[in-house]
Figure 1 (cartoon, helix red, strand yellow):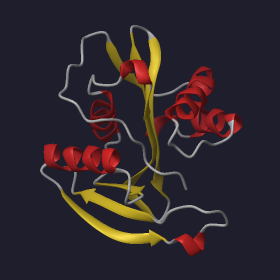
Figure 2 (cartoon, rainbow, N blue to C red):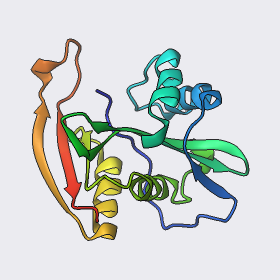
Figure 3 (cartoon, rainbow, N blue to C red):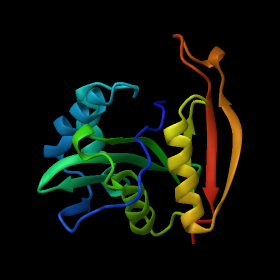
Figure 4 (cartoon, rainbow, N blue to C red):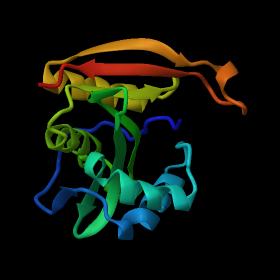
Length: 172
């Protein structure tokens, strides 16, 4: 599993030129590019982003700035817990940071996935930006955050830091 993202948290200066929408197949290459350019994200294959845009568009979001993809959130509902929206990755293009896109995308996605009562993500302990983002999201929703160990270093076949589970809710 990939770490949930990191983008600096800044006061929202989102303009009306921003649009949050489900991804389409045509966005797959942009998602891969944005993730690759982030520099700190676990980047999946370009093929995986294409599949994500096809199969999980209803639980993912793209942020357009002036008509161009500038960020994304990929997520899915957990098969064993359909009221839980699992956020896999959050990324914002360098040029679009500081506009409140990451928080806006999380809010838009939580609002769109009507059955979601809980949001989950995993974050490594050194990812202060993601911790701040999801904390701010929870605060804005008046929701609590429960943290638990999920994947320890021993679970990964490579040298990956442990991933802590953040469970936020209830969202409604």
